[in-house]
Image (tube, rainbow, N blue to C red; front, side):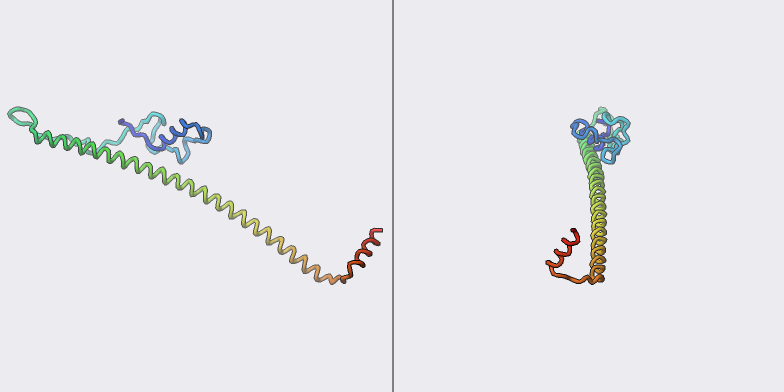
Length: 169
């Protein structure tokens, strides 16, 4: 309870326990990099930061005659303890939300970089395809202009067949 267990270490532990992506899990990846500086990822080694309310001591005055705490002072001490507990819960919730935000931000960044890489690959492939089609179009345009420059006389089909057959014999 006195040690801080960051969400990335928890994600790493959960992935290892699930066993689904065991070979793909890397401890030093952006998704699983420890944010708390742990030296052991299964047993947290970083202690939680102390709350400033925990450092403050309850100050109360003892009744000079009896040495007992008055009822008002007991109520004040109880209220301070409740405030301390509530503040501790709020700080813990805030810390968890901050870690979750960082984890979400890293996930979004990873997905964005993957999508950017996919987009770049598709764009490159399309550019290559456009270049290839443009080259083919230019080739056939040139071929067409060469055929027009030859001005071969046209002949009826029957004459062309006879010419080819005679050529083959």
